[in-house]
Length: 437
Image (cartoon, rainbow, N blue to C red; front, side, top):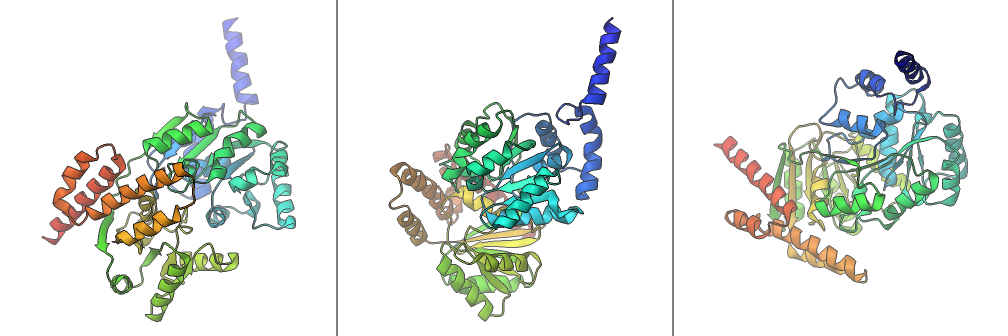
């Protein structure tokens, strides 16, 4: 009798369980083949395979992985293998476009991936929904604002959703460097659609406080956590005093002629000014900021990705998720508002494993400007912002006094992210000295 029951169970699993959440044995046997077939890679990087298995088992999954570690593949491959359409929540239209273009390059049908955001007209939105209903679309990239629209929620209730992936999940946290209030409603929207949908959260930067905030807000405190090392030995950090910055930037870029790089500026006005200065000095450069019209932004981004220009000068609106592995340098004309933001932005260099140089120009006037930007915001947000700024100040100022860094690390032990970045910088400086000798 026991043998018959086991045989019946076997029949049920093999013949009726087509959903990959249940059929993990098949998934294990085919993940490597699927990786090769869909994306052309021979092997997974780091913990990618274990992350994918966790999500495909139906478990909520939280991924903290540095820029260049291969986060996108962790939801792209499961989306291709599972039944239904995966919803990927993404903060920027440029990021969504880049992701969709990349996915379509691997497939024969453009319908495999779509965006649903404010850049589409009514006809384009209708086409997206038709492709989803026809089971042609495996990935749908949406802005959090689009996810919150009632008409979209009603539509999502009609379709099979494989899972929801929240990209750049640090935007959820008030302690994160790119806080977006709309992100804090994602859990509520998912609950309205289907409370049983597996959720994946992904970010390149998350302090313990941000990590906890993300998990609580998404209701995934029991999620399987994957946290990769953030030490990227191919990146070299340097902080310079802010003197004759434009000349310094021009000199540096000329020393790296033909190399791709990003120059970050605090304001749109400064972006346009620096971009124009570079062009006048014979450097192939373009600007990028949120104040430009969509066609100009897309054109400049594509020119950079296709290597028609070497340098993009931008506000932090540029770069999140941009798939350009050979960025050789990232320059900060102005200091960023947090170390998390600085780490993520510099992380866009050297994604191919090659050398990446990260140079920041520091002046306390930048900090004063950032403090002024916080005026008028809620008191709690201002307090958080000032704490994050002070961490940036501490990091920058003590790059000029290397001998005191050990004392600072001990004194500010609770500020773990500062200690982590500073230690990496010191190790890399030592390596450079050894190379020169």
